[in-house]
Image 1 (spheres, rainbow, N blue to C red):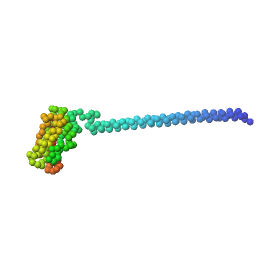
Image 2: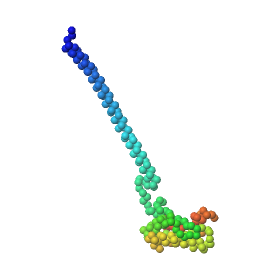
Image 3: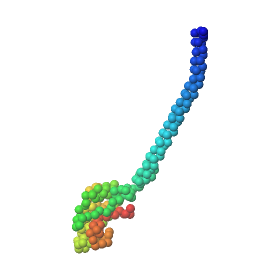
Image 4: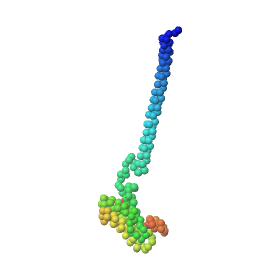
Length: 201
């Protein structure tokens, strides 16, 4: 009869063999799992910079487009005299009036005041205010109406600090229409005062 000790020895040897066979399997499995983890990390690292770079490029493109739309070059604003800046409120130099009226429209006051402020800051600058009317009414009446309109604009300009010597007034009545025509649309555009600077920039 096989002794109990011999059986234990045989079983022990068999178990050890199984363990020795299993260890390489565990080692290979561990390497495979580590490789998968590294692949995931590499993929993750690759995705983030690409997305960030794309977002950065898009942002820069939008910034450049915005600068162009605003009339800027390389982030610089318009550097010339505000009088020659086409986006300045001073670019508004024609003001319209209602029929047989010399009253300034409320929407025009801000622009006229801006011209007054400019003249106050530039005492050597002289402007001419040209008063105009439509063709309705007598010639003499229209000459007087054109003058009243120009003087109304002049008074507001003087309130902003300009001097009498800086503002000249002339009336053309109906003689210099902005638009040729014998209808309401033409008359509306001819009832006006124009601010004319020396070089009329």
